[in-house]
Image 1 (cartoon, rainbow, N blue to C red):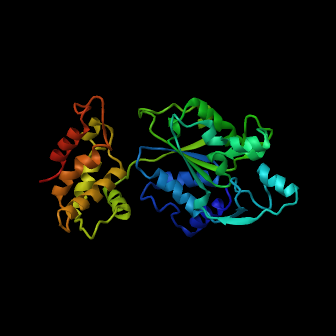
Image 2: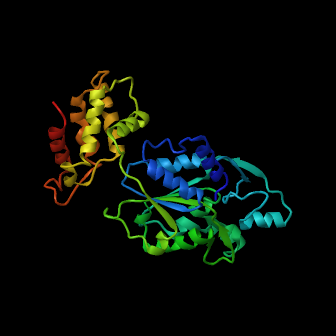
Length: 343
């Protein structure tokens, strides 16, 4: 268990509060995520883009209390109990380990899943200038990767199922044992982190199948789109940018939400391989305000929704292969607007 995380979760639970109130709704998913973290388990969140997975992980990290570390130690060693080779060598030589304090946010490390990601990105590599100075086997030449920099914190691995099978294998020892054995070195490096990973739905293009042995290291929790219209409105009003005092009436807000949610519901859902996300709703809400402001108006209109819908949603939806609009998502949005929004 990462220092301070258990106490933080239990404090919210005892007070009846919502530690993840940054996310509107999703109670079942939030409870399961917190239970996994409290149990000390790595967590894999499966869900479509734009439903708040990244926001949730950052919020969890920010809720953690500050900790004391060795100043300038990339592994965040505890001065009273150093674990990395550099700090252990200094302590053995009688050198003072200067303490410093870092916040919860500073204990958060993010990795973006990609087929181009390498084991060196995860674990680290050799600094050739230091290798020339100390020799290639000396621990001082090693530059830690992001997994090792996450020691005593949270590593957020976005889109885990976009990395290759080879890289998935590189994660196994770290997730199972909390250490990383670096190829030519005689030492194991600390990797005592909690991983929160995300995974796009398995049917999405461009994703890799996660191996059974890797999935076995995670608790899997599913997140979906906001459950109700009111929840989606609350998210927009809470997180959407307000532009120069432009007013957005209930009617305009209803139009934004109706348009976005219609991409997830019949009959239009069958036209969508990927419907519009919450991020798309936020974009549309902000853009109708911007359009009104450009035209020197201080109140957005449904006409603004019609005008900007294709540019806000066209890149954020994907027509299904069976749709007659498969090659033209913008035409699909135009048809959607004309059929869904009232005059």
